[in-house]
Length: 614
Image 1 (cartoon, rainbow, N blue to C red):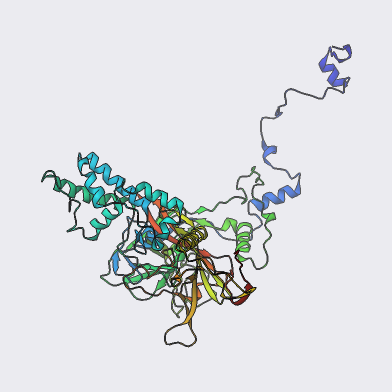
Image 2: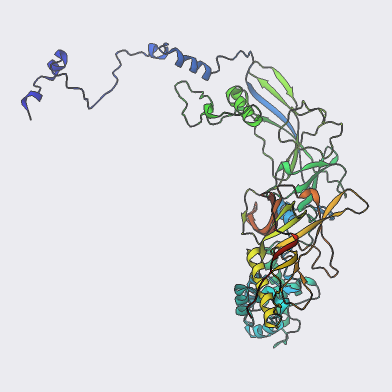
């Protein structure tokens, strides 16, 4: 080391500053010179701005001469929901062991379409389950008889079976299952059609008389297994096709009266308090006096949130919450209220926790608050008053269906809704959009159910079906004659097969009000000697009335299709409930569309004629 950096006497060098280059220390610590900390605790003002911020932090700028709440007592009325009624259905006892979304949204699994078998994924799943049950019970000798009694067989190839042979994937799966798998869907439909008289042993040649009781018991177990796996409704009264929404109601007794909570426009996929309105009348039946009145005492706790002033003296707030970056407009009331709450009234709010079970209708009669000065106040809900008084302020309050002049209801409804669901891929998706050029509404079947049970592109399926029919016509010798003229008259252009028209028609007994009626386009193939076939819808959402013995028309309310349109999809949903049990059901959800669409439909056009080589 160079001699000039050697310091023989460190104390002398520091005192006399002989080596100014020594600026690094390996240890730095505070050394108090007095035994008391009086001066340190005085917090002498060195930075006026910092002192002003600490005064704001502790609320010293407030001019309130009031005490803080130290004790509160709440008088609460609470009653569980006791009745449920789907729109147009009978009143039923409310099932608290079933999620309300599951109860309201459940739709029947359709096993056939236009008289043809569908859902071969479920049919194979049920058939495999029945085969495993036979093997586990030592009755595998009956498998061959069930294969014969409930077979999966390929249909004949003609124009009526285009849903099979027009699609390679569907035909391959159908052929793979044919003759190899028990049709568990047909077995389930047979057993569920008449549980009292239909048994699994019917039309089965028994090897031993004792096997009849075993097979019948296995059939009952098979039905219980299916019911536990897929939640199926007895009826679909909650789903209203003319509105493309669910409509249902539930009720609870409160203060000797039945309070009806109606969900008239539910299709969002998640239920909450804002999905309901108070409806007049009652659901019928005896009133269950299940109301409970409780008086509970609490210690109020100040509300805390990210970014609020820290109450500790020596604690500085971090920069994670930056209220300065929030720049609401003058009409953005939500952000303005949030900022006013956080910056002006943050320390004035206190929390009084009150636990209520799900599926409860509760109302606070009032609460007493005792402050630090010993003063006691009786407080009622802020939203109390006339229902039509627009000066009222309320949160989480359910509105009545009709705003008649009466006292507002400040009850709080906590629906037994699920916290989260797992939604499968859509099996059906229909976009309802207006076409101003064609002056109609189109139901565009974007996703349709296939034979395999999964949703498939409606556009692809429509193109494959059209090509299939064109091949059948060409194979039958129905080639179109050659054109002679250079131009041709086209009466109407074609549209994709997954476009289902809804035309406006008059409401009965009205000359002004209209509604939308489902119609069909014609499948016109050049050279086809048979009359054009009407293209049927493929989704159950649009097939309303077509699968009945006597086909019925389907009407959709005109106001349900706004200018932006709407998208409706159907899929399997799964959730777990309070005791851990799983529920799987088929439900529908609706959302806003993506605006108007054009189908390209036009009439009376002159086009270039097609030419053929001779």
